[in-house]
Image (cartoon, rainbow, N blue to C red):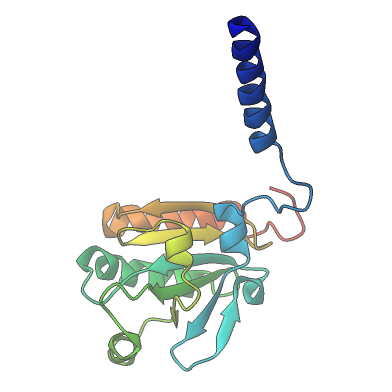
Length: 179
């Protein structure tokens, strides 16, 4: 009798594990980081909504930054130079995640610096979806709107310039091509 009840208990446990692990047919698979990036949208400092898809045909760098971040600011000049060098192939979204800066902080910075960036707020919390815990944090999207890569930190102004230039060169003509 003891053997039969142990066997019944074992069958019950196995059945429960299998049933709990079964996938529901109406359940959507979880979104990946690439999905979040490719579907991301932001709010410009003027209050307009922009989507990654608005920049199709250009390599897009989403640069999570804040006004107090010295490594972020140290690379801005080189990034702006790349923006000038590749005006038809490269877009910079300077996105404030709102760790400590607010819209007014970003707006004051933008008004006092002549960088050719699209400044925005992370109004849909992409940084949280990606698990960003520090800045600078850069996310790259190719000319088709497909996620390329992301990175935390800085290689210094020269290192960042070289890395970003390589990404632009490798992905600027990717429209219509599968990567």
